[in-house]
Each structure stands twice: as C-alpha cells, then as structure tokens.
Amino acid sequence: MDPLKQKFQEKSSELKANIKAMLKEHGGRKVDEVTLNQVFGGMRGVKSMIWEPSQLDPIDGIRFRGYSIPELRDLLPRAKNDKEPLPEGLFWLMLVGEVPTEEQTTWLTNQWTSRSIVPDHTFKALDALPTNTHPMTQLCVAIASMQTGSVFSHRYAEGMRKSEYWDATYEDTMNLVARLPRIAAYIYRRTYHNGKHIMPDISLDWGGNFAHMLGIEGEDFKSFMRLYLTIHADHEGGNASAHATHLVGSTLSDAYYAFNGGMSALAGPLHGLANQEVIKWIFRMLDTLGTRRPTKQQISDYVNSTLASGQVIPGYGHAVLRQPDPRFIAQKRFAEEYIHDSETISVVWKCFEVIPPILQSLGKVKNPWPNVDAHSGAILVHYGLTQYSYYTVLFGVSRALGVLSQLCWSRALGFPLERPKSVTSSWVTEYLAKELSVN
Ligand code: CMX
Image (cartoon, rainbow, N blue to C red; front, side):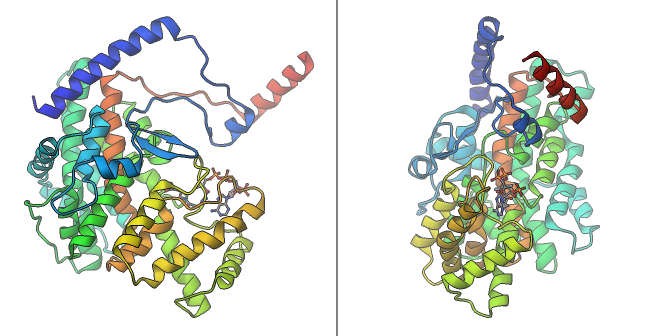
C-alpha cells in the first residue's frame, strides 16, 4: 500500500471508531435549529454535514485543517526557488491532516505524474465538440468520458465489500486529480490556440506543469498557478460545488460522476463562473467609459448603473463570509509583490475601495466585500491568459483537491445516502396555523 493511502487508512479507521462511540453516547443531542428563513433561504448556516478538509469562519475566512492561507504559505513545501506553496502539499494536508515533508510532497508529485495518462477516447470526445463549446461544458464531458476507467464502479460490479469503498475512491481520486491539468490544458489549447497542444514536462510539479501546458511562459506565472490552485481548493462543505460532489457521491456514484456534479454547480454565475463575469464586467465598464484608468467617481457611477439594471456586481458578496475574502487578499498580496504595471489590477483595487460602501448602502447585501473571484481575472490577463470563458476551469482543477479528498473521507467513514426532508409551502401554512392556534 502506498504511504499516503496507508496513512489515510490509519487516520480514517481511528476517526470512524471515535465517531461511532461518540454517536452511541451523544447521537440524540441537538446541534442546531432550523428557521423558516433558512428553509426558504437556501439552508444558510444549517449545520447538517461533516466536512474534514476545511472550515469557513465568517470573519477569519477559510482554514484548511486549521491553517489560514498566510500560515500555509509559510508551512507547505514549495518548488525550488518559489515562494508560493505547492498544491500537492495542501492535498496531503487535507487528506490526512498533517503538513507533509518535502519528500512526501515530491512523492505525491511523482505519483500524480505516473497516473496522468489521459485515455485516448477522452481527447476524441473533446475533439468531437465544437470549439466554441463553453470550456466548463468541455471539462464536464472530459470527466464523464473518463468514468470508463472508474476503479470504484469496476470493483462494485464485482461485489466489493463496503469496507473497501474508501480504497477504490482513493484510487479514482488520485487518477482523476493527476489527469486534470492535462485535460484542462488540452481544452484551453483546442479552444483558443487552434489545437496546438503542448506536451507535459514531467520534470515539473502538478501546478507548474499545468502552467507549462497552457503555454504561458515564465516562472512568475507558474508561481501564480501554484498559489491559485492552492487557495481555490476547498471552502468547507456547504458551497455548491462541494455540496453537489458530496450529494452525488453519497449515492455511491464514483468520483468521476460526483466531481462532475460539483463542476456543473461551479459553472453557475453565482458560484465559480463569477470569475469570468468579473473580468467581463470590468472590460465592459472600461469600454463604456472609454478609458483604461477610470476615476473612483466613474466606477461608482458604473456600479450604480449595473445595480439599477437589476444585476449583481460579480465578485462581491458571499453566503458565509462577512469580511474581505482571504483568498482575494492572498491574490492582492501576490500582485503587489510580483506585478507593478497593470492597469487592470489597479482597476480591481479601486473597485475594492468603491464597491463595498455602495453595496452596504443598499441595506440588504449581507457581505459587501470582495470574494475570491474579484481578483483572479486581472492577474490572469496580466500574464496573457485573456480568454475569460476559460477561468472557471482553473477554479475547477483546484476544487478537485478539496472535494475529492472529502469524498475519500465520506466513503471511509461510511456516510449514508444524503436525503434531507422537503416540505411544500402549503405544509408550512398548515404548520403555522397549528402552531399559532396552540400558542
Ligand atoms: N451585487 C448586488 N446585489 C447583491 C450582491 C452583489 N454582489 N450580493 C448580494 N446581493 C443581493 C442579493 O442578490 C440579495 O438580493 P435580493 O434580496 O433582492 O434577492 C440580497 O443582496 C441578499 O443577498 P445575501 O444574503 O447578501 O447573499 P446570498 O447569500 O444570497 O448570495 C452570493 C451570495 C455570492 C450569491 C451573492 O453575494 C452574489 O450574487 N454575488 C455576486 C456573484 C458572485 O460573486 N459569486 C461568487 C461567490 C464566490 C464563489 O462561489 O465563487
């Protein structure tokens, strides 16, 4: 058994036993109450799921196994001469709860390299699609096409024992994560570069090789990709891409189906697609204003016109966060350190000053601050990755790390089919009538 799998088995069987004992004694205790606002309001804040890799605090933001993003930048192993963390290290941390050594991280890089061969029929399935197919649709097609190689489905058909589900899920997770950069780069090159593909460089790490296969040169872009792929990896379990992966996986659909569910959720403009919407909105604003250097007053007027036309300001607001997103701040720090001449990034920073007070003044927006999607596009544009319809694919490649490590945990802990209760609105009316007559 490989060292990561071995560690995961030890940790998960220990936690499984602890949970069993805890539930035996305390399983009937209440941890939450649900209001009608929550029932009608997208279940905000209802504690109803276990998610091991990360937890989100409204004020402090995301913590991966207890570590903040600045802490991870110091703690996680890095590529040679790089200051940004390797996403491999974060995957190890999320999966087994320990910061890996450099040797363990290198082992994981090599594992993913050895598992990164994409089946030929996946390239053929992609090539069958018109090149103007949205890149997120292409990503979903590619992931679905690889389900043919699912270890879980294969072993299940042969009568796999329940106690082995985690093992097959681990294998599928490792294979799928290993192949994603190659697939995502293939989608990019066929869509925007006439199918002139770039072969992998197996001397590079997972994120560095992805940057290389996209065809964007330079060590700084590789650094940015490593940071990007680290900070987008997970955001606890309730966000739509994580929850969708979790829900689909709970039916014992394999990692390919489950991750595809997550990617379909990520493709919505209120979630991951917001990263393309942000840069689209910025460029439309600059075109409308006829300047690359708008004043704060001009931005403010444009924000008000967007709101007046009944649209949201992309990249702002969040269902949980109530402070600027630490993932926005991490990208701002990166831009301050590495990039000194970008007009688009200056616009993003001016928006950061102008937009929050306007949203706050509406009186209904619970979080007026920027989220993760408000910054990434301007940095990508700086490095020459200007095709914004592609941006959500980058988010998706990273998101695999978190949602699939949890999928391993869900199968190891034996989580059941997810099946919450729904009611009709007339049930609510009748319930209220009964409650009010009693009280
Ligand atoms: N611009 C304008 N109005 C906004 C807004 C924004 N950025 N954010 C929230 N609001 C509005 C909501 O549309 C809602 O209005 P109505 O009551 O008229 O329907 C009201 O404020 C209350 O919403 P909320 O409770 O503050 O926010 P939600 O939890 O319902 O939604 C989110 C959160 C992210 C969907 C929302 O803030 C939004 O639409 N933001 C813009 C899209 C975006 O950036 N999404 C990316 C999020 C990060 C990610 O998942 O990648």
